[in-house]
Image (cartoon, rainbow, N blue to C red; front, side, top):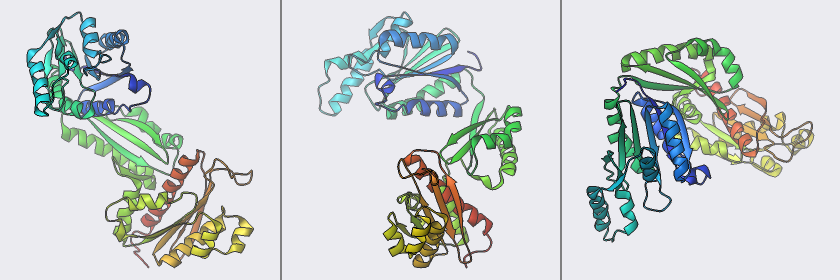
Length: 424
């Protein structure tokens, strides 16, 4: 077979189209195939309809050497994948006694009688190789079409699909297509910058780098820079990724905060441990979200001391000592109040650092001078209290997330700039 092959993922199930089930299978398959050196160029989803399944398969085979289908292998009337594939490939279905016996044994182990409709799962297209499924009743299928194409069919149940993909499907594909390349990816993460501004910073690298390739992905409060390399040698792949990462990080400076699965709160936690500093948080508009993120990590008790959700003006006055006159003069959402919240939180919690957040999350409460999304984030240390103003553009949930993200970044940048100073 060909040394390089284009792959397409075909997920089958009306529940996927209606949004009743989230398609996690195609994400997992795409990542696993890339790691194995098999590039996915297309992904399609089709409902439980024989005609449309046939059309989707026909389209996939016209442009791809490998088609990997999941779903529709159950025992019910709307499980039509095998029948549709057999019809499209003009192959007859036959009862596979070995598969049927295996299904019966699974029921017998649970002291159950196999329903008659489970026999459908033992109807196998002519010429297909059965892929045993030790985790369920639906077998997988491997169907070769001449010397250049393969159709792989797996159950839609994620746990069954994942085991079959790694243990049976990928090894067969790598052997059949003599796959030598490995596709490796690395994700660099930046915050405090927009996607367009980041594109301007590294746009020339994006345009001129072909291996590794660079892609930008925007998420609330952060931008991911995905580096993807194709090499036969893992050592060579790592070298190319390391070189490009170093160039990008040099341009980003403090905008860069982590790699791959690292979260901003993890980075902040490590810096707090490294500098031996403690922190407390006073939150208004974020309603405890920042406290949750800081404490959602093992070992956070070493640096997180206390948090207060001071949603009302009374709470700000009573718990943090924010003067009523200050709130009356400037409003609860203001720079002076945020500064007083951070200072008051640090004083009452007796910590090295404290954050204060106040804002208008929305959708109501905004005005011309103080629109929805207006947020103030202050940080207090032993020798200063500073504050920044933000104007977030999202809905209530997004604005809360963005505020917590920026607050973490304020803390991260402070810790980086005082890395060698240590606690006061």
